[in-house]
Image 1: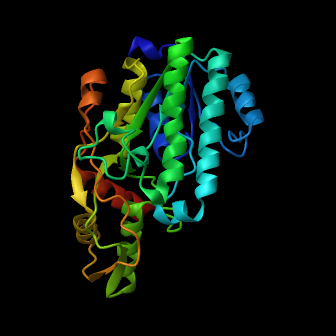
Image 2: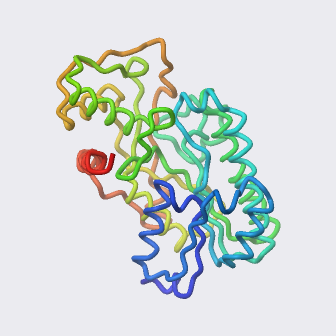
Length: 312
């Protein structure tokens, strides 16, 4: 265990969620005895009262802020106001009152949705302000981006050790498989498994399959977050990714193959594609705190499918 983690009391907001559960697991493997994962029913972090009660009850040295209202393209289109307000209020109030309470370090986790729609590929952190985000998830992306502004302002004025990380799309065991709010990989796994079991001749997929995405395995993401918490102390945002890019068409065909679905894939071009390409420049994370993803995409997909089959 790095001496950094000795006697640390760590709050992981969203610690009961997908990424958060793996971050909590990784903290405990590092020997951290005091890990608090507040649940939203107990501490509503959109409300100031919930923020202050959490800080009083947990008295943390470090906060990793993962709690967010999230969802795929459909959920973002239906709830843009909630996605903006809830994410903004949770993050801004938590960071401000953490600073006031003397919390030593704050790890703010943003989103790849904060990047401009037409960012040159691979996305470099310096391109973050060169345009408006993709429209379908701009309110969410901008709310999370304000945490970068806040972290930099608090470091500049107060010397506060707040850092900002930008993970690419995550996937893995324990992901959200609810079709009303899931992201592309769990949605496709569920569709293919159910189509295979029911004997359906086809599945429907959104868009035309041409956009590309980069995906980071959730356990790798947790490792990247904790390395940054331990070793990184600068105001510049840092991408967390795998450096592996795949088209949605190839992704869909790969998931069909791994789940054993042999029917037709029908592309519904009335549905939006989302951002045309997404791939991060991940060199800063390696240079600044030694992070590289280690899980191959096929291995990660197999683990995810196996978990879904065992736990649905």
